[in-house]
Image (cartoon, rainbow, N blue to C red):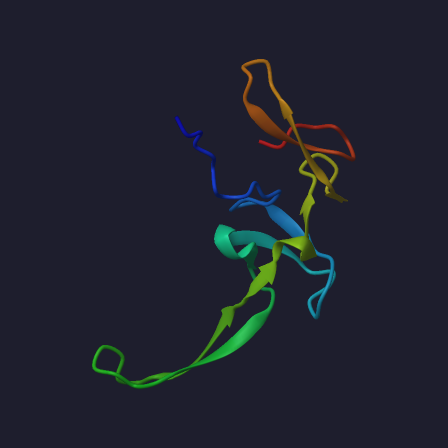
Length: 113
C-alpha cells in the first residue's frame, strides 16, 4: 500500500498575518497578508508591490480603465511580525500537548495564534 503525502509545502506565513518586507523595492514596509499562493510560494501583502493593470472595456465593464492592485511577493522576502513584541521574527513549529503542530516566534518563544 502506498503512503499518501501532503504535496503542499508548509510555509511560515498565513493569510491574515502581519509581515514586514525584508527585500525588494518595498523593503521595510509592513502590512497584512491578503492571500497566500502556496503552489507558487508567493503572497499578496496589503499596500505593497503595487502594480498597474490596464483593463480593456467590455460588455460587463464598459468604462475599462487603469487599476492599481497588489502584486505577489515571494515568501522568502517576508518576515512575520511577532504579535507579542511587534518586531520581526523567524518562525518555528513545535507540537502542543494535543500533538498538533503550532507555530511559535523564535525571538520570544510565544505561540502564534
